[in-house]
Image 1 (cartoon, helix red, strand yellow):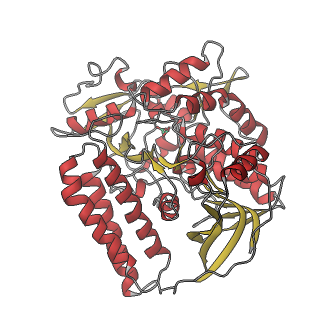
Image 2 (cartoon, rainbow, N blue to C red):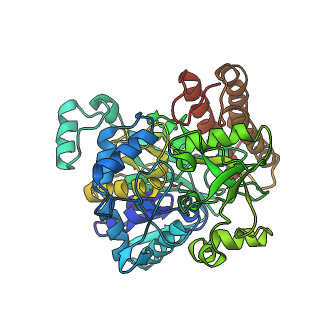
Length: 518
Ligand code: SIN
């Protein structure tokens, strides 16, 4: 199969890109479950943007830098914030109906924001955006959707371009000068991906391949992320020499519901944005004296404080001062979910706990989504554009995904120069093979190891002496298997990405943002 643009992953960024790129050429979307199964679908809060006259560009930039512990790439932050309002209006044009009051967009607040600047749709913003994008993508004649198709590896060819050719190409494609050196950028070309579909291996050749595979939450025992978030993009990209940056910065959302749900059900930060307080078993609002922003301090700070409080008892959210009518209308999804679990948020305290939520770093890309491998681009959670620094500001994730996928779509053009090439295909193993059963067991071990060693508080000595050797052993077990399938490949991706996280965490000796060293 051959296509102009191969998009791997079907979250907000992949679908948003596909819609725009389809005006220029043929787009193929590969997604390992159904089109709708993405992290986006789980995003409750909203999208941060400068949309109010009393807000300004500088304040949003400043809040993003502060939350990121000033580890951010300021240029990338400015670029994202400048393009924030346009990204929201594009969604409105596509049919997303953000909440309004008196004809104006309603704006809510989350941790780390100095202003109400988050556009939202109830407490199911991501779901609504995904619904509209899926509808539009399905209608488009130039977009082919391959569901239940698992990207096994990226296909590459060697190419040796000199400095001059590299510059000329950059100019022709209107690319800004990449952050990597010319020789690094142009010694490999991505020409598509090998996928497993219906127990068969297929090669999809593409002029340009785009990774929008999302995050890594499933590497951890407790996560708010759906089962698809297994670090596939990072693992595949690292295997062909892509640079990975800031991957140790895993954000733990402070308020996942403390009940046995899989994944952990999120109690959106907008609940605190609308006045909920965090209390301990004694009923004390412990954030009051911890940070000037109190319950709405940046996530890393709140998550650590809850973690400390949990040493002596449970932690709860208290929003009982709001009326039932208000809660039902403003947080319909949360209200219903809690009701099913016999928690009445108008009367009861809501038990909460931190859970792995977001990967702040990832595949290093420039402002045009270019990785250090030619014809391989990436956007969304799988990347490190530098906008999040050491800890992401709430509701900047959908924003980043939109702004950078718009940018990649604007710059890419089909080049149709790929020649048919032969590639080795691995043997596909049965779902009930002993190798698959072992992979399932190893998956659980990976989650336990990452939760214990790469969680909210990290001990570098133990990461080096215990976690890295354990994870390397798991990766070896998986590598020596005599064939593959989705379960095995996914587990292998989890092990590879975990090793990258653990090694990066070990290298960073000082605490910063969501990397907190004991
Ligand atoms: C939330 O609603 O708390 C999550 C939003 C985000 O991760 O930015």
